[in-house]
Image 1 (cartoon, rainbow, N blue to C red):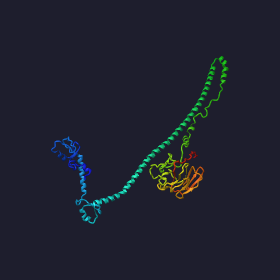
Image 2: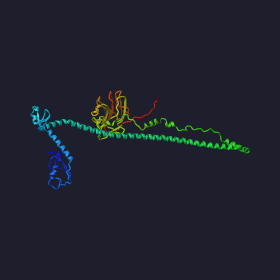
Image 3: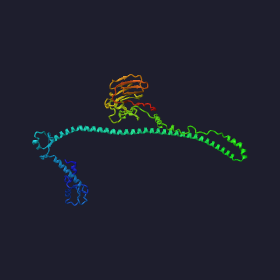
Image 4: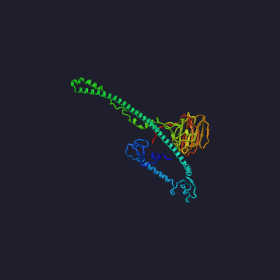
Length: 468
C-alpha cells in the first residue's frame, strides 16, 4: 500500500512518481510526457483533471515538486537496499539471535551461522520490541519523575514570586510607618523651635519698645536742657530752676541688661537629637524573641504579616513541598518552626494560648527529618481534650496534673544546662521540665489546630545609657 507521501508525489495520469513535472495555469501538476500525450491531436489544451484551458503556451517546470520526488526516490532506493543481504543480495527474512543481526536464507545455511539460533524476522521483531519496551520502562518512570520534579520547581518559582511581592509590600508598609513617624517628629521639633523663636522675639520686642521709649524721653530732656544752656543770661536765669527740676525728674537708672535665656536654646533642640528620636521610636516598634518561618508552615496554617501569630486556616493551601517544610503525620497541616535555632545560652519566649483548645509547643532538632513522624523527635507540651500532656524522644508520654488553664505559656530553653521548661508566667507556676543534653541546634515548634490565633508575645523594649 502506497504511503500518503507517495500518493501526493504521484502523477494523476500515470499514477507513478512524477517524472519531469510541469505545472499548468490551473496549478495542477503532471509529468511532462503525460500531459503532452493527453493533448496530442487535441486543439484545446485542457487540464486532465479540472478541464480548465491552459492559458500559457509553454509548460513551466515545477522544480520544487521535482526536488521532492528525486529525494523520495533516493530514500526509497536506500531503504530497499537495506532490506537485502550485502553478501548474497537476498531478502533479509531471518534473524540470528547469536549475532543479533538480520540474515538471508543463504547466510542461514553457511558455516558462519551453522550452529546458531535463527528465527523469522517477524518473531525476532516482536521479541525484541518486548525487550526494548521492558528496557524503556525505567526511562519512562524516570521521565515521569522528572516531570513531577519540574512541576514542583514551577510551583516553587511561582510561589517565590508571590513571596517576593508580598514581602516587598510589607517592607514598604513598615518603612512608610517609619517615614511617617520621622516626618511627624521632624514637624513637631521644628514647630517647637518656631514657637520658642516667636516667644523670645516677642519678649525681646517688648523690651526693645520700652528701651526706645526711655531713649526718646531722655533725648528730649537732653535737647531741651542744652537749648537752655545757649539762652541769654536773663532768660537762662529765669528758666534755670525749671530746667534743673526737669533734669532731676529723670533719675539715672541702671542700664538695662540682656535678659537671661534670650537666645535660642540650640542645645535643647540639637543635643543627642538622633538618640532622643531613636528612644522615642521604641514606643512604635516591638521585638519578638522568636519569628515564625513561613517556609516551614503546615499546609493549613495562616501566619500573620509580622510572622508572630499562627492559626488554622481551614483549607489546604497549594504550597511547595520544599525540604524545610514540616511534612510528617499531623504536622504536615498544623505545625510551623521558628526561623532561628539555638545551641547555646538561655532563650525564652511567651506564647498566648488564651482561646486555643488544641495545640502543642516545644523544640525540634534542626537536623531532624521533617517528612517523617516528627512528633517522636520533639520535646513538647500538648493541650488537647482539656488535658496537658508531654512527649519527647527520651521520655514516655505523660499526662500532667493542672489546677488551672494558663492563658500564656513561657518556654525556656537553657542549652548550657540542658533544660527545657514550660511555665505559667502569670502565676509563676512550673508546668513541666525536661532535662536533656541538647547537642543539636534546637528550633522552636508551634502547632495550632484551631481557628483562634496562637501568638508569640513581644518583649518589653528599654533603652539605657552606660558609662564607658
